[in-house]
Image 1 (cartoon, rainbow, N blue to C red):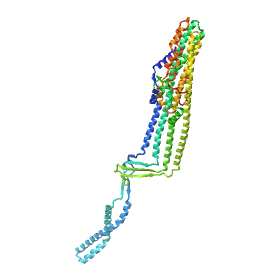
Image 2 (image 1 turned 135 degrees about the vertical axis):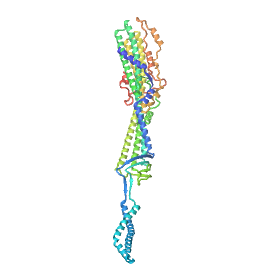
Image 3 (image 1 turned 90 degrees about the vertical axis):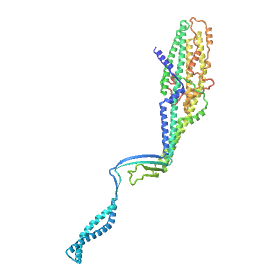
Image 4 (image 1 turned 30 degrees about the vertical axis):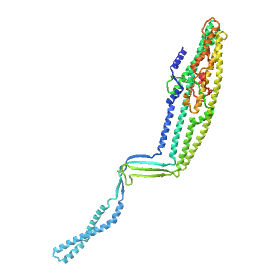
Amino acid sequence: MKRSVILGLVTGVAVSAAPISLSDAINMAKAGNSQIKAEKAKVDMAESGQSEAFSRFMPQLTLSASVTKINDPIYIDLNQIRSGMIQVHGAEAYQSYYSQYYSDYYKQYYDQAYDAAKAQGADDATATATAKKAADQAGQKAGTEAGQKAQQQTEEKLNEALPSFEKKVQDDVFFNARLTAIWPIFTGFKIYSAYDAAKENVNAKKAAFDMAQNTILMDVATKYFTLRLAEELTVLRESTKKNLEEHLARSKKLEEGGQISKAERLRAEVALAEAENALEDSYRDQSLARLALASLLHTDTNLTAITPVLAPEQSFGMEEFKQLAMDRHPGLRQLRTERKRSQDAVSAARADYYPTVALFAYKELYTRDLTILEPEWAVGAKLQWDLFKGGETRSKVSNAKALDRSLSSMEEQTMDNIGLLVEKRWREMEHAKSRLESLKKTRELAEEAHRSQTLAYEAGLATGLDVVDAELALSRLQVADLKAHYDAVIAWLGLLEASGEVVNAGEMIKDVKPVEEKSAEVSKPEEAKAEEKKPAEPVAEPAAVPAAESNVVANDSLNVIAPPEGVKQSTAADSAPADSAKAPEAATPATLAN
């Protein structure tokens, strides 16, 4: 009862699942996969870096402003020079003023003494002699007063002619605003090398993006066909279970009529139980495969694969695929771009041997707080040449050259590995092709043996054990056929991965249509005639559906038994390498085919 409930739930999910083609799955992964989005963001970052590197060719225009507070105002004091000038020019002025004032004071004292003598009745001669004597006696006082007056007058005149030689050139709080332009016109090709490196970095990131996308889409395609294989195996095992149920029903009726032994009926029951277990495993594997695919696509688990497990015909030979892989493999393209970047690094390191020349200009926008030493605008050119840096430049050049040699060796090794990988995948395709041809003939024999054993059993000429063995043998061959087609598709995807073309796998395979094998065609009228010719049996029972007919029905559901007419099947069994064909751990092709 529990098993029936589980099978019913799984079947219900499969019926309600949304159909999705390989092309749809690839497009969903490209649009929604987180790792692909992360790699795309890295490409955008690299493109921004390229734009930044290009900006270094342009002049830089800068507007700057600042306000500053210092401890004290700044003065220029030249009063020592002023003192010297005063000493030189003050003596002459003093002498002139002294003579003038001394004469004035002497005349003043002379006139006072003369007037006093005249007032006392002295004659002119006596008054003159008295006045001269009095003036001579007051000469020292007149000299002192004249000196003081001359000194004062000299200082006043010199201070007026020579003000203080102390000047404030900067306040303790000042403001600056400046517009500056700098344009490097020669940097020893450093700017050119940096721009080329940034451009190659974009190409490297694009190659890394293609590499990551190629790997993820290979994983998507592998899990997609794993789901498709699980679904087809489920249909096939449902058909096997149905055939064994019909055989068990006939065996029970024949046992009741005494025509077969109990052992034969028990063998049919055992075979049916094993078929039910295999079907339950198929449902579980199908569910896990659907979950694994949905996880990669970031969607719900209600998916069902509709693209058949058939590889398209190959129009290229092995050497052509090798050349295609050498030209387009994302990993190899990434290595080549990294090598170009290393060569640019050599040029950038050598740039330190050359001088740097730049033009500059600036304009002061706020001139109020400028000092007497600062101009309002200036233009000029600047040269800087590092003549000796202790061997640093030589070491940088050697390091860049060593990196270039390392990448060159890695590129050669990668080319050898890719060539070996393509040849391996190609041989796997050839092996798958031969396997499919061999299985085609073997399966025709198994289908005919199954049909013969079924008719012989119904005529009483064969045992139930023979029918069960024929049914199981046919089932195993059908599973092997599905597995061979799966291996062929994975080998074909491996070639696409090596050439970086997995993104186009959906478009390449969309026109491949499955057809029914002619060996599986058995007409119902012939079966009806066989039923009419059967001898009457004690127990009447409906004729069993021949395995060939049921197989045709299964083929209609599976859509994978043979390639389309006119299409050459050129894929091989894939012992898919772990780095390219990654199937879910819980639902690998090996477990599905068991």
